[in-house]
Length: 310
Ligand SMILES: NC(=O)c1ccc[n+]([C@@H]2O[C@H](COP(=O)([O-])OP(=O)(O)OC[C@H]3O[C@@H](n4cnc5c(N)ncnc54)[C@H](O)[C@@H]3O)[C@@H](O)[C@H]2O)c1
Image 1 (cartoon, rainbow, N blue to C red):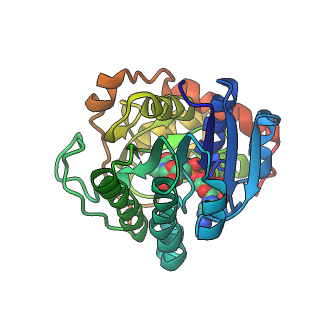
Image 2 (cartoon, protein in one colour):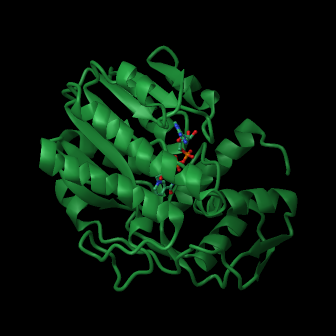
C-alpha cells in the first residue's frame, strides 16, 4: 500500500480493530482515536507495537486538529453503530455520526490527508424498494442511525466535489466475527449459552440479511484505500434468512435445541436487506469466508475469551 501511516477512528471497536490488525501487518504506523463508548483497548492487544490508542472523541474538534496533521489516510469507522441505541439516544447518535464525521472531514481537508475511507451502512437505504439493492437505490433511512450515517456520507461526497477530497464510502451490510459486541449472531450465541435447549428468535424468521465475515469486510476497506472512489456496497453476497441462520447456529452450538419465533421486531429494523455488490466485485472484491466457517470462528472466539453466561 502506498501509505506510511493511518488514522483509524473507532479502531478499538469490532470492525475497526480487525482493520488496524491488517494495517499493522502491512507495516503502517497506525493511530486509533476511540472514546471506548463500545470499543475496548484489549481489542488492540494483537496489534500492540504497531498501533497507538488515543482515548478521545470525534466530537472534539481541537483533538482532531492536533492529530490529523501528517496523516496519510483516515479510515473513519468510529460511530454509534447500534440502531436501538440511536432510537434511545438520537442526540449522541447524531453528534457522533453526523457532526463527528463533519469534524473528521473538515480536519482532513485542512491538512495533507491523501484519502478518507468512510464506514457507511445499508441503513441509509431504508425499506428496500427493490432487491438486490444497488448504490442507485433511493435513500430513505427509517432510523436516527440511518439518517446520521447518511448525513456523514453526504458531507463526504460534497467535500469530494467542492474541495477535491479523495473520499470513498463503503455501505456495509451485516458484518460479523470475533469481537463483535452486538447483533443477531452474537445474541444467538449468548442465548444458547444461557439455555442450550431453546433458542428464542425475535421476528418471524423470514427476515433476510447478507452477512459478511469481518476479514472479508477488511478486504473491502483495503480495496477502498487502494482504488475506491465514491460509494460502494459491501456484503458477503449470500443472502440468508434468520431461520436458516438460527438452524445453522443450533446445529453448531446445541444440536436439538428447539427454535421459537416471537413474531416481534424492533423499531427501525428492516425486513429484507440483500446487496448488489457488483460495483465492489468489479474492483476485485471476492468474499472468501463461508457463513458456516465464519460462525464457527466466532463461536471459537466466544469460547476462548470465556465470556461469562449472562
Ligand atoms: N457491524 C456491522 O454490521 C455494520 C453494518 C453497517 C455499518 N457499520 C459501520 O461500521 C462501523 C464500525 O461498526 P462496528 O460494528 O465495528 O461497531 P463498534 O461499536 O464495535 O465500533 C464503533 C467504534 O466507534 C467508537 N465510538 C463511538 N462513539 C465515538 C465517539 N464519539 N468518538 C470516538 N469513537 C467513538 C466505539 O467506541 C467503537 O469502538 C460503524 O461506523 C458502523 O456504523 C457496521
